Length: 475
Image (cartoon, rainbow, N blue to C red):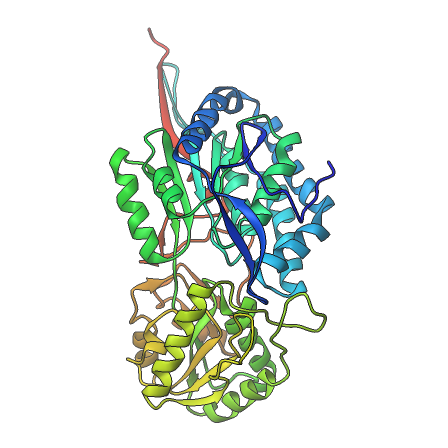
Protein backbone atom coordinates (compact mmCIF):
# COMPACT_ATOMS: atom_id res chain seq x y z
CA UNK A 1 0.00 0.00 0.00
CA UNK A 2 1.35 3.42 -0.95
CA UNK A 3 0.63 6.19 1.56
CA UNK A 4 1.95 9.69 2.12
CA UNK A 5 3.49 9.69 5.59
CA UNK A 6 3.85 13.46 5.76
CA UNK A 7 0.33 14.75 5.09
CA UNK A 8 -3.37 13.87 5.36
CA UNK A 9 -3.54 12.49 8.89
CA UNK A 10 -6.81 10.65 9.50
CA UNK A 11 -8.16 8.31 12.13
CA UNK A 12 -9.08 4.72 11.33
CA UNK A 13 -12.61 3.68 12.33
CA UNK A 14 -14.06 0.42 10.99
CA UNK A 15 -11.30 0.13 8.41
CA UNK A 16 -11.98 3.55 6.89
CA UNK A 17 -10.50 7.04 7.12
CA UNK A 18 -12.23 9.39 9.55
CA UNK A 19 -11.64 13.09 10.11
CA UNK A 20 -13.19 15.37 12.72
CA UNK A 21 -14.82 18.78 12.97
CA UNK A 22 -12.14 19.75 15.47
CA UNK A 23 -8.36 19.45 15.05
CA UNK A 24 -5.24 20.16 17.07
CA UNK A 25 -1.66 20.81 16.02
CA UNK A 26 1.28 18.42 16.20
CA UNK A 27 4.67 20.05 16.74
CA UNK A 28 8.29 19.34 15.93
CA UNK A 29 10.03 19.59 19.34
CA UNK A 30 13.33 20.55 17.73
CA UNK A 31 11.88 23.68 16.11
CA UNK A 32 8.58 24.23 18.00
CA UNK A 33 6.94 24.54 14.57
CA UNK A 34 3.48 23.09 13.90
CA UNK A 35 3.86 20.26 11.41
CA UNK A 36 0.36 18.80 11.02
CA UNK A 37 -3.32 19.14 11.80
CA UNK A 38 -4.60 16.14 13.76
CA UNK A 39 -8.25 15.04 14.14
CA UNK A 40 -9.68 15.56 17.62
CA UNK A 41 -12.24 12.76 18.00
CA UNK A 42 -15.69 13.65 19.30
CA UNK A 43 -17.65 11.70 21.89
CA UNK A 44 -19.91 10.39 19.11
CA UNK A 45 -16.90 9.17 17.16
CA UNK A 46 -15.58 7.34 20.20
CA UNK A 47 -18.98 5.69 20.63
CA UNK A 48 -18.95 4.66 16.97
CA UNK A 49 -15.43 3.30 17.30
CA UNK A 50 -16.21 1.16 20.34
CA UNK A 51 -19.38 -0.14 18.64
CA UNK A 52 -17.33 -1.00 15.57
CA UNK A 53 -14.76 -2.90 17.62
CA UNK A 54 -17.51 -4.73 19.50
CA UNK A 55 -19.19 -5.74 16.23
CA UNK A 56 -15.88 -7.05 14.85
CA UNK A 57 -15.11 -9.09 17.97
CA UNK A 58 -17.19 -12.26 17.36
CA UNK A 59 -15.65 -13.01 13.97
CA UNK A 60 -12.13 -12.07 15.05
CA UNK A 61 -12.19 -14.00 18.33
CA UNK A 62 -13.42 -17.19 16.63
CA UNK A 63 -11.00 -16.91 13.74
CA UNK A 64 -8.37 -19.67 14.01
CA UNK A 65 -5.40 -18.66 16.14
CA UNK A 66 -3.01 -19.43 13.30
CA UNK A 67 -4.76 -16.88 11.09
CA UNK A 68 -4.69 -14.19 13.78
CA UNK A 69 -1.01 -14.89 14.32
CA UNK A 70 -0.29 -14.61 10.59
CA UNK A 71 -2.05 -11.25 10.37
CA UNK A 72 -0.16 -9.87 13.36
CA UNK A 73 3.09 -10.98 11.71
CA UNK A 74 1.97 -9.08 8.61
CA UNK A 75 1.76 -5.92 10.73
CA UNK A 76 5.49 -6.32 11.24
CA UNK A 77 6.00 -6.82 7.51
CA UNK A 78 4.07 -3.63 6.76
CA UNK A 79 6.13 -1.61 9.24
CA UNK A 80 9.35 -3.02 7.82
CA UNK A 81 8.31 -2.18 4.25
CA UNK A 82 7.75 1.45 5.29
CA UNK A 83 10.48 1.60 7.92
CA UNK A 84 12.33 4.57 6.48
CA UNK A 85 9.18 6.68 6.36
CA UNK A 86 8.27 5.64 9.90
CA UNK A 87 11.76 6.58 11.14
CA UNK A 88 11.69 10.00 9.48
CA UNK A 89 8.22 10.76 10.81
CA UNK A 90 9.14 9.48 14.26
CA UNK A 91 12.12 11.86 14.41
CA UNK A 92 9.96 14.70 13.16
CA UNK A 93 7.24 14.33 15.79
CA UNK A 94 9.13 12.79 18.72
CA UNK A 95 12.57 14.34 18.25
CA UNK A 96 14.81 11.30 18.69
CA UNK A 97 17.93 10.88 16.60
CA UNK A 98 18.21 8.38 13.76
CA UNK A 99 19.80 5.63 15.85
CA UNK A 100 16.94 5.82 18.35
CA UNK A 101 14.36 5.74 15.56
CA UNK A 102 16.03 2.67 14.05
CA UNK A 103 15.96 0.93 17.46
CA UNK A 104 12.26 1.68 17.92
CA UNK A 105 11.00 0.80 14.44
CA UNK A 106 13.22 -2.27 14.17
CA UNK A 107 11.99 -3.41 17.58
CA UNK A 108 8.38 -2.97 16.47
CA UNK A 109 8.95 -5.36 13.57
CA UNK A 110 10.56 -7.95 15.84
CA UNK A 111 7.76 -7.70 18.42
CA UNK A 112 5.05 -8.33 15.84
CA UNK A 113 6.79 -11.40 14.48
CA UNK A 114 7.69 -12.89 17.85
CA UNK A 115 4.38 -12.23 19.63
CA UNK A 116 2.73 -13.82 16.59
CA UNK A 117 4.45 -17.09 17.53
CA UNK A 118 2.98 -17.18 21.03
CA UNK A 119 0.10 -19.38 22.15
CA UNK A 120 -1.49 -19.87 25.54
CA UNK A 121 -1.84 -23.61 26.15
CA UNK A 122 -4.90 -25.32 27.60
CA UNK A 123 -4.07 -26.67 31.04
CA UNK A 124 -5.50 -30.11 31.79
CA UNK A 125 -5.99 -29.96 35.56
CA UNK A 126 -7.73 -33.34 35.86
CA UNK A 127 -8.47 -36.23 33.54
CA UNK A 128 -10.09 -39.45 34.64
CA UNK A 129 -12.62 -41.81 33.11
CA UNK A 130 -15.34 -39.95 34.97
CA UNK A 131 -14.20 -36.34 34.77
CA UNK A 132 -12.12 -33.83 32.84
CA UNK A 133 -11.15 -30.36 34.06
CA UNK A 134 -9.64 -27.99 31.50
CA UNK A 135 -8.47 -24.43 32.07
CA UNK A 136 -8.35 -22.35 28.91
CA UNK A 137 -7.82 -18.69 28.10
CA UNK A 138 -10.53 -16.70 26.31
CA UNK A 139 -10.38 -13.16 24.90
CA UNK A 140 -11.92 -10.24 26.75
CA UNK A 141 -13.63 -8.27 23.99
CA UNK A 142 -12.84 -4.64 23.18
CA UNK A 143 -9.50 -3.46 24.55
CA UNK A 144 -8.57 0.20 24.90
CA UNK A 145 -4.89 0.97 24.35
CA UNK A 146 -3.40 4.31 25.45
CA UNK A 147 0.21 4.94 24.47
CA UNK A 148 2.86 7.48 25.54
CA UNK A 149 4.98 9.97 23.64
CA UNK A 150 8.47 8.63 24.36
CA UNK A 151 8.25 5.42 22.26
CA UNK A 152 4.96 5.91 20.41
CA UNK A 153 5.33 3.13 17.83
CA UNK A 154 7.03 0.38 19.83
CA UNK A 155 4.80 0.73 22.87
CA UNK A 156 1.73 0.71 20.65
CA UNK A 157 2.90 -2.61 19.20
CA UNK A 158 3.47 -3.94 22.73
CA UNK A 159 -0.30 -3.60 23.11
CA UNK A 160 -1.61 -4.29 19.61
CA UNK A 161 0.23 -7.57 19.02
CA UNK A 162 -0.80 -9.50 22.16
CA UNK A 163 -4.32 -8.05 22.20
CA UNK A 164 -5.00 -9.21 18.65
CA UNK A 165 -3.26 -12.58 18.96
CA UNK A 166 -5.39 -13.28 22.03
CA UNK A 167 -8.54 -12.62 19.99
CA UNK A 168 -9.54 -9.13 21.15
CA UNK A 169 -10.37 -6.11 19.06
CA UNK A 170 -8.83 -2.74 19.91
CA UNK A 171 -9.40 0.98 20.11
CA UNK A 172 -5.99 2.64 20.21
CA UNK A 173 -5.41 6.20 21.38
CA UNK A 174 -1.91 7.67 20.93
CA UNK A 175 -0.55 10.53 23.00
CA UNK A 176 -1.68 13.88 21.59
CA UNK A 177 1.99 14.88 21.60
CA UNK A 178 2.95 12.09 19.16
CA UNK A 179 -0.10 10.96 17.17
CA UNK A 180 1.31 10.99 13.64
CA UNK A 181 3.12 7.65 13.36
CA UNK A 182 0.21 5.88 15.06
CA UNK A 183 -2.34 7.42 12.71
CA UNK A 184 -0.23 6.35 9.72
CA UNK A 185 0.07 2.85 11.19
CA UNK A 186 -3.72 2.68 11.36
CA UNK A 187 -3.96 3.84 7.76
CA UNK A 188 -1.39 1.31 6.62
CA UNK A 189 -3.19 -1.57 8.34
CA UNK A 190 -6.59 -0.90 6.74
CA UNK A 191 -5.53 -3.31 3.99
CA UNK A 192 -4.03 -5.84 6.43
CA UNK A 193 -6.64 -6.38 9.15
CA UNK A 194 -10.40 -6.92 8.90
CA UNK A 195 -12.43 -3.75 9.42
CA UNK A 196 -13.02 -2.91 13.06
CA UNK A 197 -10.29 -5.12 14.51
CA UNK A 198 -7.86 -2.22 15.06
CA UNK A 199 -9.23 1.30 15.29
CA UNK A 200 -7.03 4.36 15.86
CA UNK A 201 -8.51 7.57 17.24
CA UNK A 202 -6.69 10.74 18.27
CA UNK A 203 -7.52 13.34 20.88
CA UNK A 204 -6.65 14.71 24.29
CA UNK A 205 -7.62 14.08 27.89
CA UNK A 206 -11.36 14.04 27.19
CA UNK A 207 -10.97 11.19 24.71
CA UNK A 208 -8.87 9.25 27.19
CA UNK A 209 -11.51 9.66 29.87
CA UNK A 210 -14.33 8.58 27.53
CA UNK A 211 -12.36 5.48 26.58
CA UNK A 212 -11.44 4.44 30.11
CA UNK A 213 -15.00 4.94 31.36
CA UNK A 214 -16.77 3.25 28.47
CA UNK A 215 -18.91 0.32 29.67
CA UNK A 216 -18.25 -1.75 26.52
CA UNK A 217 -14.46 -1.55 26.84
CA UNK A 218 -13.34 -4.62 28.77
CA UNK A 219 -9.72 -3.70 29.40
CA UNK A 220 -7.42 -0.67 29.38
CA UNK A 221 -3.73 -1.09 28.68
CA UNK A 222 -1.91 2.14 29.50
CA UNK A 223 1.70 3.27 29.48
CA UNK A 224 2.46 6.62 31.06
CA UNK A 225 2.83 8.47 34.33
CA UNK A 226 1.88 7.08 37.73
CA UNK A 227 -0.40 10.08 38.34
CA UNK A 228 -2.40 9.34 35.19
CA UNK A 229 -2.35 5.62 35.96
CA UNK A 230 -4.12 6.29 39.26
CA UNK A 231 -6.85 8.21 37.44
CA UNK A 232 -7.27 5.40 34.91
CA UNK A 233 -7.52 2.81 37.67
CA UNK A 234 -10.24 4.88 39.35
CA UNK A 235 -12.08 5.42 36.06
CA UNK A 236 -11.88 1.74 35.08
CA UNK A 237 -13.36 0.68 38.42
CA UNK A 238 -16.85 1.69 37.25
CA UNK A 239 -17.35 -1.62 35.46
CA UNK A 240 -14.37 -3.52 36.89
CA UNK A 241 -12.33 -3.29 33.70
CA UNK A 242 -9.17 -5.31 33.52
CA UNK A 243 -6.13 -3.02 33.51
CA UNK A 244 -2.48 -3.21 32.64
CA UNK A 245 -0.57 -0.14 33.82
CA UNK A 246 3.09 0.41 32.96
CA UNK A 247 3.92 3.55 34.89
CA UNK A 248 6.78 5.72 36.12
CA UNK A 249 10.08 4.79 37.65
CA UNK A 250 12.94 6.34 39.59
CA UNK A 251 15.34 3.57 38.76
CA UNK A 252 18.53 3.19 40.81
CA UNK A 253 21.83 1.96 39.43
CA UNK A 254 24.37 0.70 41.96
CA UNK A 255 28.04 0.64 40.92
CA UNK A 256 30.41 -1.50 42.99
CA UNK A 257 34.08 -0.61 43.45
CA UNK A 258 35.46 -3.47 41.36
CA UNK A 259 34.11 -2.29 37.97
CA UNK A 260 36.31 -1.31 35.06
CA UNK A 261 35.62 2.41 35.27
CA UNK A 262 36.54 3.32 31.70
CA UNK A 263 34.37 0.61 30.12
CA UNK A 264 31.49 1.03 32.53
CA UNK A 265 31.28 4.83 32.23
CA UNK A 266 30.03 4.69 28.64
CA UNK A 267 27.48 1.99 29.48
CA UNK A 268 26.22 3.98 32.45
CA UNK A 269 25.96 7.13 30.38
CA UNK A 270 23.59 5.49 27.92
CA UNK A 271 21.81 3.70 30.76
CA UNK A 272 20.87 7.15 32.01
CA UNK A 273 20.56 9.27 28.89
CA UNK A 274 19.24 7.07 26.06
CA UNK A 275 16.32 8.81 24.32
CA UNK A 276 17.34 11.98 26.20
CA UNK A 277 16.40 10.09 29.39
CA UNK A 278 12.75 10.08 28.31
CA UNK A 279 12.64 6.43 29.24
CA UNK A 280 10.68 4.85 32.07
CA UNK A 281 13.58 2.49 32.82
CA UNK A 282 16.43 4.99 32.47
CA UNK A 283 18.94 4.89 35.31
CA UNK A 284 17.74 7.95 37.21
CA UNK A 285 19.79 7.70 40.42
CA UNK A 286 23.40 6.59 40.06
CA UNK A 287 24.86 5.25 43.31
CA UNK A 288 28.66 4.98 43.06
CA UNK A 289 30.94 3.44 45.67
CA UNK A 290 33.11 6.06 47.32
CA UNK A 291 36.33 4.30 46.27
CA UNK A 292 35.66 5.04 42.58
CA UNK A 293 33.29 7.99 42.85
CA UNK A 294 35.71 10.68 41.69
CA UNK A 295 37.18 8.59 38.88
CA UNK A 296 33.82 7.46 37.53
CA UNK A 297 32.19 10.88 37.80
CA UNK A 298 35.08 12.40 35.84
CA UNK A 299 34.79 9.67 33.20
CA UNK A 300 31.05 10.32 32.83
CA UNK A 301 31.60 14.06 32.43
CA UNK A 302 34.36 13.47 29.86
CA UNK A 303 32.15 11.14 27.84
CA UNK A 304 29.20 13.54 28.03
CA UNK A 305 31.36 16.16 26.34
CA UNK A 306 31.57 13.93 23.25
CA UNK A 307 27.79 13.54 22.87
CA UNK A 308 25.93 15.92 20.56
CA UNK A 309 22.51 17.20 21.61
CA UNK A 310 20.50 18.68 18.75
CA UNK A 311 17.86 18.24 16.09
CA UNK A 312 17.38 14.50 15.62
CA UNK A 313 17.12 14.95 11.85
CA UNK A 314 20.66 16.36 11.62
CA UNK A 315 23.53 13.99 10.94
CA UNK A 316 25.75 13.43 13.94
CA UNK A 317 23.08 14.14 16.55
CA UNK A 318 23.14 11.67 19.42
CA UNK A 319 20.37 13.02 21.65
CA UNK A 320 17.33 14.99 20.55
CA UNK A 321 15.13 17.50 22.34
CA UNK A 322 12.59 17.01 25.09
CA UNK A 323 9.44 15.96 23.29
CA UNK A 324 6.96 18.59 24.46
CA UNK A 325 6.64 21.97 26.10
CA UNK A 326 5.00 20.67 29.28
CA UNK A 327 7.85 18.28 30.06
CA UNK A 328 10.39 20.93 29.04
CA UNK A 329 8.97 23.37 31.59
CA UNK A 330 9.04 20.69 34.31
CA UNK A 331 12.73 20.10 33.66
CA UNK A 332 13.47 23.83 33.69
CA UNK A 333 11.77 24.05 37.09
CA UNK A 334 13.72 21.05 38.37
CA UNK A 335 17.03 22.60 37.29
CA UNK A 336 16.01 25.91 38.82
CA UNK A 337 15.34 24.17 42.13
CA UNK A 338 18.74 22.46 41.96
CA UNK A 339 20.49 25.81 41.43
CA UNK A 340 18.48 27.48 44.19
CA UNK A 341 19.42 24.63 46.53
CA UNK A 342 23.11 25.20 45.85
CA UNK A 343 23.73 21.83 44.19
CA UNK A 344 26.95 21.40 42.24
CA UNK A 345 26.69 20.76 38.51
CA UNK A 346 29.47 18.65 36.99
CA UNK A 347 27.98 19.09 33.51
CA UNK A 348 25.09 20.97 31.92
CA UNK A 349 22.41 22.71 33.91
CA UNK A 350 21.89 25.72 31.65
CA UNK A 351 19.09 25.76 29.08
CA UNK A 352 20.36 27.12 25.74
CA UNK A 353 18.73 30.11 24.09
CA UNK A 354 16.76 29.66 20.88
CA UNK A 355 14.01 27.49 19.47
CA UNK A 356 13.49 23.89 20.43
CA UNK A 357 13.00 22.06 23.72
CA UNK A 358 16.66 21.33 24.32
CA UNK A 359 18.05 20.37 27.72
CA UNK A 360 21.77 19.62 27.91
CA UNK A 361 23.14 16.48 29.51
CA UNK A 362 23.19 17.47 33.19
CA UNK A 363 25.15 15.65 35.89
CA UNK A 364 24.82 16.68 39.54
CA UNK A 365 27.46 15.97 42.17
CA UNK A 366 26.31 14.00 45.23
CA UNK A 367 23.13 15.89 46.14
CA UNK A 368 21.36 15.11 49.43
CA UNK A 369 18.99 12.17 49.34
CA UNK A 370 15.97 14.44 49.83
CA UNK A 371 16.80 16.74 46.91
CA UNK A 372 14.11 16.94 44.22
CA UNK A 373 16.56 15.73 41.58
CA UNK A 374 16.85 12.50 43.62
CA UNK A 375 13.29 11.95 44.80
CA UNK A 376 11.47 12.89 41.58
CA UNK A 377 11.47 11.15 38.23
CA UNK A 378 13.03 13.80 35.98
CA UNK A 379 12.13 12.07 32.69
CA UNK A 380 14.83 14.14 31.04
CA UNK A 381 18.64 14.32 30.94
CA UNK A 382 19.24 15.22 34.60
CA UNK A 383 21.28 12.65 36.54
CA UNK A 384 22.30 12.81 40.22
CA UNK A 385 25.49 10.96 41.19
CA UNK A 386 25.28 9.66 44.75
CA UNK A 387 28.14 8.36 46.87
CA UNK A 388 27.87 5.26 49.08
CA UNK A 389 30.17 3.10 51.21
CA UNK A 390 27.89 0.50 52.82
CA UNK A 391 25.85 -2.10 50.95
CA UNK A 392 22.95 -2.22 53.40
CA UNK A 393 22.75 1.56 53.31
CA UNK A 394 22.71 1.81 49.51
CA UNK A 395 20.06 -0.90 49.18
CA UNK A 396 17.87 0.97 51.65
CA UNK A 397 18.41 4.23 49.76
CA UNK A 398 17.70 2.58 46.41
CA UNK A 399 14.40 1.21 47.74
CA UNK A 400 13.35 4.50 49.37
CA UNK A 401 10.88 5.44 46.63
CA UNK A 402 7.24 4.87 45.72
CA UNK A 403 8.43 3.44 42.42
CA UNK A 404 9.68 -0.06 41.60
CA UNK A 405 10.00 -0.40 37.85
CA UNK A 406 13.60 -1.41 37.20
CA UNK A 407 17.16 -1.15 38.52
CA UNK A 408 20.67 -2.23 37.67
CA UNK A 409 23.75 -3.42 39.55
CA UNK A 410 27.29 -3.19 38.15
CA UNK A 411 30.28 -5.17 39.40
CA UNK A 412 32.75 -7.93 38.56
CA UNK A 413 31.80 -10.02 41.60
CA UNK A 414 28.63 -11.55 40.18
CA UNK A 415 27.72 -13.21 43.45
CA UNK A 416 27.78 -9.93 45.33
CA UNK A 417 25.93 -8.13 42.52
CA UNK A 418 23.29 -10.87 42.48
CA UNK A 419 22.80 -10.67 46.26
CA UNK A 420 22.17 -6.92 45.91
CA UNK A 421 19.85 -7.37 42.93
CA UNK A 422 17.65 -9.78 44.88
CA UNK A 423 17.10 -7.13 47.55
CA UNK A 424 16.00 -4.38 45.16
CA UNK A 425 12.25 -3.72 45.07
CA UNK A 426 11.76 -3.59 41.30
CA UNK A 427 10.16 -5.65 38.57
CA UNK A 428 13.36 -5.95 36.53
CA UNK A 429 16.93 -5.81 37.81
CA UNK A 430 19.77 -6.01 35.30
CA UNK A 431 23.30 -7.02 36.28
CA UNK A 432 26.10 -5.51 34.16
CA UNK A 433 23.70 -4.51 31.41
CA UNK A 434 20.52 -2.52 31.02
CA UNK A 435 17.54 -1.94 28.70
CA UNK A 436 17.54 -5.46 27.30
CA UNK A 437 13.96 -6.41 26.48
CA UNK A 438 12.40 -9.35 24.67
CA UNK A 439 8.92 -10.30 23.48
CA UNK A 440 9.51 -13.49 25.49
CA UNK A 441 10.61 -11.92 28.80
CA UNK A 442 8.02 -10.59 31.25
CA UNK A 443 8.16 -6.88 32.10
CA UNK A 444 6.19 -5.12 34.83
CA UNK A 445 6.56 -2.85 37.84
CA UNK A 446 6.38 -3.18 41.60
CA UNK A 447 4.82 -0.69 44.02
CA UNK A 448 3.44 2.37 42.17
CA UNK A 449 5.26 1.58 38.94
CA UNK A 450 2.36 -0.40 37.61
CA UNK A 451 -0.01 -3.32 37.63
CA UNK A 452 0.23 -6.35 35.37
CA UNK A 453 2.77 -7.67 32.90
CA UNK A 454 3.74 -6.88 29.34
CA UNK A 455 5.51 -9.33 27.01
CA UNK A 456 6.01 -13.09 27.31
CA UNK A 457 3.13 -15.52 27.84
CA UNK A 458 2.30 -13.68 31.07
CA UNK A 459 1.75 -10.53 29.03
CA UNK A 460 -0.36 -12.37 26.47
CA UNK A 461 -2.48 -13.82 29.28
CA UNK A 462 -3.22 -10.25 30.45
CA UNK A 463 -5.47 -9.93 27.39
CA UNK A 464 -7.56 -12.96 28.33
CA UNK A 465 -9.85 -14.34 31.00
CA UNK A 466 -9.36 -17.78 32.52
CA UNK A 467 -12.21 -20.18 31.83
CA UNK A 468 -12.51 -23.58 33.50
CA UNK A 469 -14.58 -26.27 31.77
CA UNK A 470 -15.53 -29.27 33.87
CA UNK A 471 -16.95 -32.28 32.00
CA UNK A 472 -18.64 -35.14 33.83
CA UNK A 473 -18.24 -38.13 31.52
CA UNK A 474 -20.12 -40.49 33.83
CA UNK A 475 -23.42 -38.83 32.96
